[in-house]
Length: 459
Image (cartoon, rainbow, N blue to C red; front, side, top):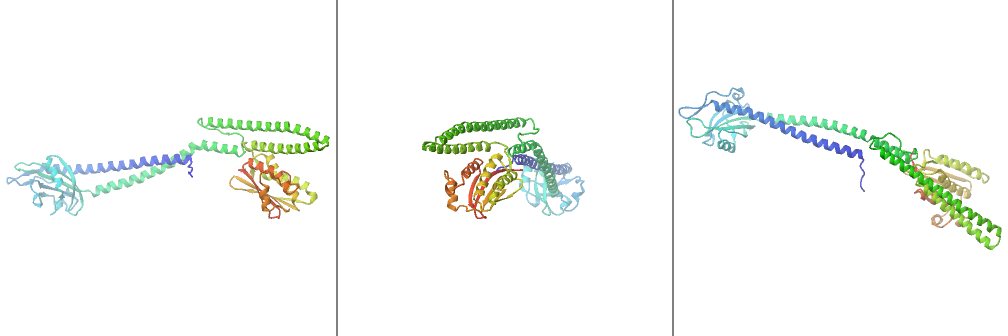
């Protein structure tokens, strides 16, 4: 079974997901750009130190490298300060290749990789960058440049390094701050999208409620002010409702005309048969009576089918059943039959009042015929969109086999128990026309219990 997701949720989820994806990409891009900026600033600072070393480097008479002046930054004179420089003889390898180191290195050296030295030596005069380990094992950002000094055959490499942990910490703090801010922006955008979706779909929700009012019988048309995009839909719905009512009214008129056209000839035949008074007249009389019953039966079904398909039909159950109970109480007063009701408030049958009266009236009349002293009618909610009517009596009732056979097509209760008539067949047909049903069982009062299930509408 596929789950149904509301349009509002789809719009909200789609917009929120897109906004979150864009904010995530933006956060990554900003963090990356900031990291590059920090590294570039660090490289520029180290490049200036390397440039100062190159400018101050000179060669003695014996070919040794010396500095006319050292970089003025006091951090390079403080031991293990995290900022270091050194000059390396590229012609040699190992510890003997270190020519001069900064005071901050004390008696240590920068553990620059051989790959960094090779890249610098391969591109004299060019700035190369890399990583190295400091005296305390701290990660360093290193800038190197190979230069050729006078009176020396090989090049020397000027290196400057700085602890990169403060820079990494700045980048990390920036990323965390950006993430928090962007999450706040995401929450604000999500809230804005939610309210925008709710406001944007408000006319659709109003139309849905208006259509529900029509379906439940609280209104006859889809009324309200709608945007220009929805107004044509409302007009089409109203036109469809008008057309549906016209078809139902036309069906009712047709059924009435058909009833009049059939009943008049049947009545004439019945009168003629009665006046004849012979065996042939009795035969015609019996057959015309059957014809009249069948015409009534099928006309009721046709009328009920037309009513059941009508949109907006609505009948209050409590008032209808109460009126029937008062009428039948007077009819069966001479036998001392009490007709009690237990009716829940706020129940509305989704159909025509005359159909409800015919169904419940037939069942209550049958119960009154067979009751010893009491008939109980109960109306209650039956599911989310349904109602149940229980008509019980304290008469002889029917056994399980009788209840089952009584509901079979073509079987009449009057054939099982005289006097019941065709009420149950009529009720069953009307209930089925409304997608309901009839169930027979034993009553708690001792007689028959008829459970009538019908569609219901909201208040």
